[in-house]
Every structure is written in structure tokens, then in C-alpha cells.
Image 1 (tube, helix red, strand yellow):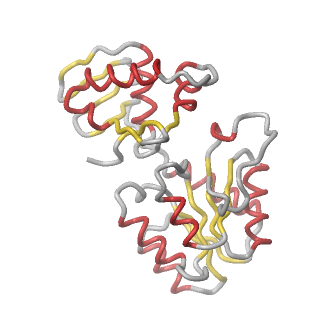
Image 2 (tube, rainbow, N blue to C red; image 1 turned 30 degrees about the vertical axis):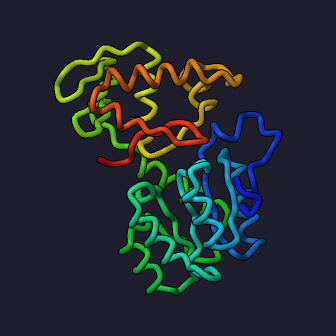
Amino acid sequence: MSSNALGGQSSGAPDKAENRRLIWCVEDDSSIRDIEVYALRSTGFDAVGFEDGSVFWSELTSPKSRRPELVVLDVMLPGTDGIELLKRMKASEALSSIPVVMATARGAEYDKIEGLDLGADYYLAKPFGVMELVSCVKAVLRRCAPKKTGNVLRHGGLVVSLDEHTVSADGMRIELTYKEFELLKLFMSHPGIAFTRDQLMERVWGIDYLGETRTIDMHIRTLRQKLGEYGGLIETVRGVGYRLEAKQ
């Protein structure tokens, strides 16, 4: 994360920060921003604060950044305001699925309506309490969670049945090893989210990443081969790791 991202990830937490859901807070008032970040971290999230839209957008579009699972975005920002940033996010295929909670001044009805029309998932009227913020974030994350029908994940013609532990592409069964299946399940549960190698090692293998990339890269390579034309959906993010293409 850039040094310009204020309120960086905390240290000394009992669990690794990358294992917690990441929330970004864009707010030019440092006192409000610090309270937002502190409240979210205190309730089990990882949180990072940004003081203006330019720094936020630079980090959001950087291939080396860990993408947030939700953004709390103030409308009134110096330079590029929140409405313009929301427009950019919703116009981007890679960013449009990230939920956005807009923070607006109380009584700013136009900002609220415009934000919701542009695709904001919720709005908070300032001043708001910290528990209201936390409850709102949790509610939006639940509502925007990947939709599963009968414990089935779908991406075009690629189908993963979690109950049957099977994978098919355009109706044809594909035989995967246990680790390959777990990798594909993780990617399809979080389309568009880039996972680092240490995240993949911990989530799929259940052990800390020790710097050896061969195991992960080998499994990704064989998984791509077995998926055939759908193997291209698993993208390499240079300097970061791997992700599943957000949309076809």
C-alpha cells in the first residue's frame, strides 16, 4: 500500500490483516477518517483511510494493491469528488462490483439520489455514529455477497457444484484434484479479486507462505490446462498473484 494511503494496516492483530475483509474509507477530514478506520478495525475488519480522491484512485487502479471489498466514500472531497469517483468505478469492468457506501451531509437530498442512481449501495447522512457505520458496512457486504444457487457457482459455461464437489465446462465434466478444486472455488467465489501467493497458500493449503512459488504456480498451470478455453479466465496479476476475470 502506498505511503499516501492514510491509516495503513495495523500490526499486532491476532490474525493476519490480509485474512480480514478490507474496507477503504475516503474522507478528507482526518478526525472523521481516523474514527472510521478505528471503528472498523475494532470490529474485525481491516481498514485503510485515504484523504483525497486522487490518492484513492491511484491505489485502486494499481495492480499491486489489494482491492477493497467495500468502499466508504465521502461525497464532498477536494479535487475529484465522490460522485465522480463513483462514476469511474461503475464504468470500470474490474471495479464496478465493489460495493460503495456514500457519506453525505445531512439534508443533501440531491447527492443521495444521484449517488443511488449511479449505483451506490447505501448512503450515510453525516454526522453518523460509529456503530451505524459498522452495521451499514456489514449489511451491505451481506447483501452484495456472491450469489449462490443450490451451492452452485457459475461463470458463463463454467459450473462448480459445492455439494457434489464437481466441475463442468459447457456441460462436460472436468476432473480436478482437491487443491485444484479449492483454488477454483476460491476464485469463483470472489471474481475480480486478486489473491497473493501467500493468501492462496494459507487459504487452500492451510499453511503460511514461505516464499516457494513453484507449488502454487504448478497448480494454477494444470488447472488452466484442465479448464480448456475457460483456463484463460484465471489471470496472472504481475507482481501480485492471480485472480478470476470479473466478467465475460
